[in-house]
Image (cartoon, rainbow, N blue to C red; front, side):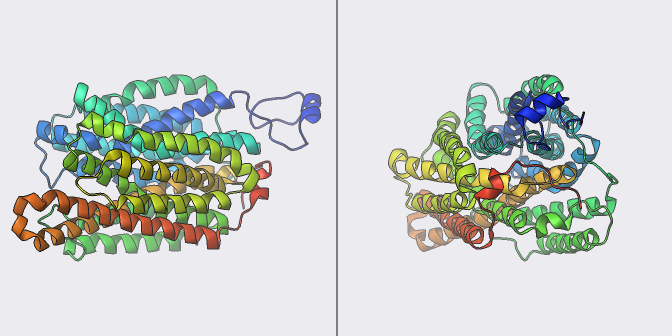
Length: 509
């Protein structure tokens, strides 16, 4: 009898039910999907959940305006910078083991952050959260990859994953607003602990272990140069952003240039090493594959254009429309609903039409939605000027996230499932960090220019100036989403025949 990678099956029954050589479905795969979904939601939530808690946390811990960014960037810096290494660790020590370690570590770091007595302690805890998220996120996605092989089931599983990836940020804003207003900003961190405990208890019986086959030696030099290079890049982008309306961008400051130069040197060294070592951290075959590489690039550009939308809309709700944290959180709820509904449709269509007919229109829809948001004024009504664009963007993004993930991971070898999964998250996080820094520079510059042109109005011009900055950022974001659509249209060549195939892993080369 041939051993199944999942469970032993009677050979007669197997031959009667499935073609020879087809992977046998894991009987607990749908329960495992539920566990993976919980973990992914927790990771995505923490990118945005503290946004609406910022004012309360600043007041409680005496955090200055100049340092408030670290509540957000301490998490995204370590998350984005360590994802590639986290993916390889998950491949080698076992994805289930890495998944559980990541959950426990994430919960512990969250509790420490919620108990933080000082700003420095909170920043360190957020950084530790990011480090464990970098282990947890690629382990979760690679477990999904090696668990589902049948096309319709795989599309449905990626539909759930895509809905969470796209809607999690909006849910985080809603939850953050509710917890901050009715309990405390600290509960934005405490809430992770019970979620993680439940996920661990469910993962032990329902998630099956898988590891990379063959050579599992670590590429230490690649891990060091990639991690430090990505951290330097994200840190440089953070330092380049202006600190307020009276400040200007810091792209040419010596400190910013130093971090950009360090990133360039380290990342160049990384790619040189990866072409020479026998067991690379990031096999070049992954990014040089046309469809896989295009998926990573589209994910990066989409992150640049979309990620900052939540920041600027959140500011518009609270600063311009004077929403409470809870009301601002509920204002984002339609985005989550649109993602969930769109993901259901997208997952059904993907095996029938292939990725490109979903991906390109989805990016175009996102572009249109962001362009509609450029019409906002300080007097705009939510129902007429925000709700419709938000729904258009959310449904469009559901048609992006699922095809991108599916195409990037289709036919991936078990040996590389973790690192390929990490590349999707890395491209999103790096893109989001770049977009936040770049679009924030555009927004603050536009606001300062507006204030200068309307100096006679004094403080009365501030709401209009801030709104002018937000709308300029939305316009720039729309440009990036349109660019991603063009890239997908011209470079993506995979058709529906690929996602209709049984996704038997390709051999390691």
